[in-house]
Length: 497
Image (cartoon, rainbow, N blue to C red):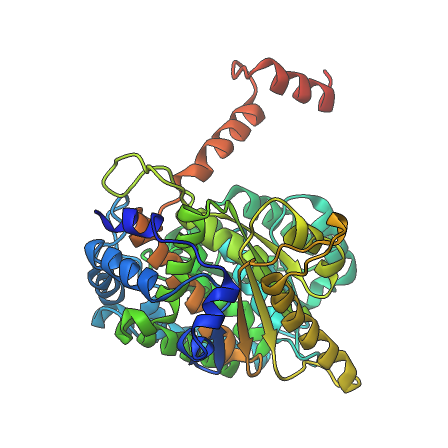
């Protein structure tokens, strides 16, 4: 019997039965790392399942793949390169770690120069990017801001003018720094927005708009061709993937807005999680345990989605960030060896913010026909100075929802019957600061990688995003690029001749 068969044939116990059978269950299935407490006890994992998953992980070479990832070996098979985001945090090939360190010093020097007024009186920052070049910085700025930052920063990704125009109306062009974040420095959406910002600067009388542009890219020569001086280009390695790039110079706007020491704290927290992922045995390895749970619900219970609810307003963008990280990485139907994947890949990641979500989507979670594993995130220390009742109520709602999903409640009235036995995990941070947020994001990265290895897929390419871009470009080009009748009708209605 292979390991997947053993996992799939494992007798299903209820969560109540698992707790009744093991008074030590919470201790066995809870772990602490870098100021974060991870509670997996309300999942259906047990010792037998853990043993089967460990054997599967061994067969899939998870230990060897973790070593390959963290030493700079070629793990991105389809594109023939390493995936070196951990080198940005100090764990990787020696030359890559040293290169990342030197580039960080260059970035720190530019931050200090701007703070000292080298580019004039700067009060506003417009950070342009898309995907990983925007989602990471936006999450960090939202989560870690304290309200008295030296610069007001707007992260813009959408080419919808409704995203950019209000920022241009609010900012002073003469006091604005434009940051263009693009790994390839060819991203169409980013450069459409960049053109609009530079046009606005010139219209407002800024004599040298290009003197107030910073480029963040793995292709510095393209930034030079675009007209940006080398002294204001912050490169990063091509082996750092876009959705893993917030640790590189893509984090410049974060370091400038929040302070370089906050950025360094974030790197340090991520490095702590890197070391844990690299060294901890599987039965104590937090990202690996999380991946085992993911695979159990996806493959055995056939759960097609996973819900993430942050019971902290500062983390409201985390579900958005995880959508790209998890679904762009593991939303594949082909394995790394080119064979068709014969089981589910990444579940659909979705979520929201507590307590808002309780009055919107929790009806389905408690009584709907879909089984949805839920992940709760909360922070012990509040991020505000209002009355203690605010934070107490927030945390108790978070804990109560997890308890209710597990316990359920029987009723003779079927409309008021809660089946219970619905799984959840809880991630509880001591505080929300650079270190804990860095460790948390690294946890999700490594969880995503562990899931990919268990499935035998490559999480570091994203060819699935290309076809839609090609179609859009073909429509833009016009001419003989004829589409299906529905698409042609839509185009003609929007742009009548």
